[in-house]
Image 1 (tube, rainbow, N blue to C red):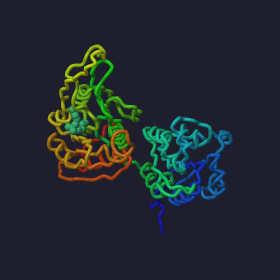
Image 2: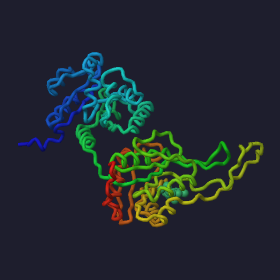
Image 3: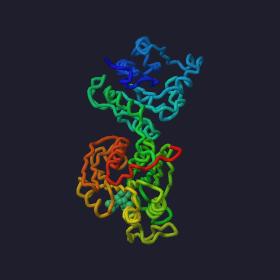
Image 4: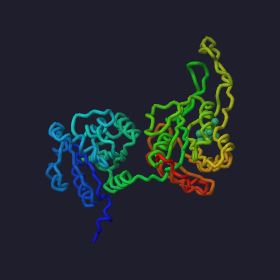
Length: 414
Ligand code: C5P
């Protein structure tokens, strides 16, 4: 017999949002498991969802009334009361429409209004027909939502309701349940750590309007900053220019050039316990940058003389006291050998190597695969996964380093 203490979600208040996808029937099974594991579940359906599954099914299984109408809900201010007492909001299945509303802050029914009123963790499991998930608009909305700390699970590839094969099937129930477990009992295993992260490209001026830059989007560094924060660390993010939203709860220091980035990091080195150098720092800059815009009158071509930028990682590694220092190796070929060499040459503790030309990896992509090489001689291959998940795996690997300052005492406000 199962004792109540074995129940995974005992005492948890969960809002299960169901939207109008053919996969809505799968939410019935999800609800059954949540209830069986001890959760109190309030189901909120979109109007379209009620066309696929009768609300009565959810009412009977959740033993609670099911609401979809904002105006009926207003009588009890449900959009506030339910949302305020919830420990978690999980939307499964979520249509492209729900993702769009969430990204843009539209609030025209109870579920979308709750997405704005609640402050609890949110998990979204999308399901949509072929082609829609891959559409740039849906991908943009997904990226925006993820940056705000929402877990958006990847839909699966397979046979869709339309008979087409594509990516768009609701992910399996196990994946949704393990995401729920992770968000309900987040690890706070980085409390007491002070983490300095660099991210994005640098820009090295040629003249006041032109610069040498690179294709880094900053996504990996931002994901690491967010993950460390969520796991309890204090985080400072030193970032070159990116189009990303600043992660919640993280102090952001914007910089432009390699030199500025170096200064910003070196002055904060003593504060930190762990440094992750995810930025794509320019290796060379123009020896001279013109004060005025260079005219194109000289049609014979022009030669730019470049000089190396200071290597920030090497400087940090030389000046450190007990900080753990992690570097990145973005390569255009299998990265293992380069990562091993970089670890030794720079005198650091761990190198995250990745092949930026591999499919779905590297600059601008939301996913990445990597090989981790550390000073204790370990090599860990991490398969393709969302950058946010990879960020957690990198933090896990840092914790296993012999030099990781595990005994750091939490500060008062943590
Ligand atoms: O030497 P390389 O550029 O291949 O090494 C990449 C790593 O070194 C990255 O972690 C990057 O942030 C860091 N780097 C640096 N200063 C530079 C160039 C790269 O800290 N000037």
